[in-house]
Length: 424
Image 1 (cartoon, rainbow, N blue to C red):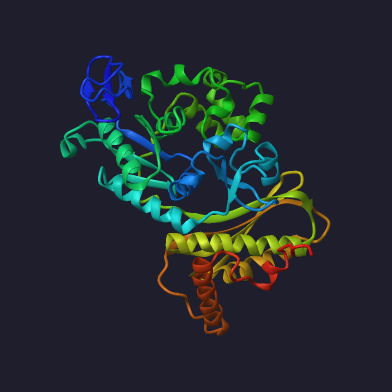
Image 2: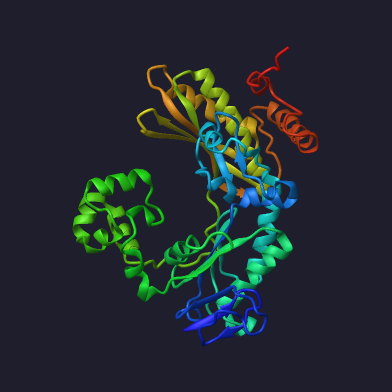
């Protein structure tokens, strides 16, 4: 059995309750601690943590980062989670559960700066870093003992301390022999956690959990599995692979592998983010094209803001809709040149929306995204539509004004008509 002090990185082959070097009681003990090297690093309530870092007055208050009354929760702090608030929850429901919560709109430029600093610290540990979102990444630290003079576990404990000290937010670490188990481990001890799952203990560990404990099994799929008699991971472990494939196709094979804790995917630093998107679920289902267009514009701005914050452009615009009975629908259109401009996203997605919305079907969700991403260089000048350059210049000027004076400083007519006027 091996022990590691998470504060000073002292290592021991004995089971410790307190560190003999620094007296800390933040001890990680596991028999596989010093022989596994695939990690999943996940920031704790990242957007909310950045906001609390920058405004200490919020530190002890429940905080929600997200949209307006008809929007959804982007993330929330752990105090708000104690009331039952969760990411992707409709804002009206979140505020009903936690009426005293402070609500802030997301500031993606600030989050991107923090994420970039954390990524820099991860790159110091290993070249094998696979960023999967702004606030989480996989790391392969195999063989780094020679470089750093300490085990991968000690390097990760050191990383967590540096992130807290230099960036001002906390991370949780999962360590195992593959990506699936590392991701599972990182969820076990949040916030500010560190957990290890050995490959030989994976089956027994996973077996008693409900099927939705498996990362990637969402609520709808879990309901389907339960209807088919699969209530726990052990039920899937015992199931015949061919029967699972006949029932669920390729997903059945994936499900079987996950249930046994098997995952042969490498940590690939070249698997960069493939898309940027924003979506919202409505308080009431709607078939009104004008209402849907208003939401589409707002989401186009959010998606463009994220693209600008991350310094990327996208060549493919995707419209996402979900009907009142949860039927998903996506439509895509490729652009001649990549863009990160809200006007271009909206102008591309709007005709796709008009084709689908006929007034007969109500929708509960709309989203828009950019994919086929590349580094942003400059706004393309469309010779067919010379007004593109003027629109781009106007939007860049608007961005500067919003950054300096706030999100309400500059509004389009479409955005302004949705702002409620004060009474009196």
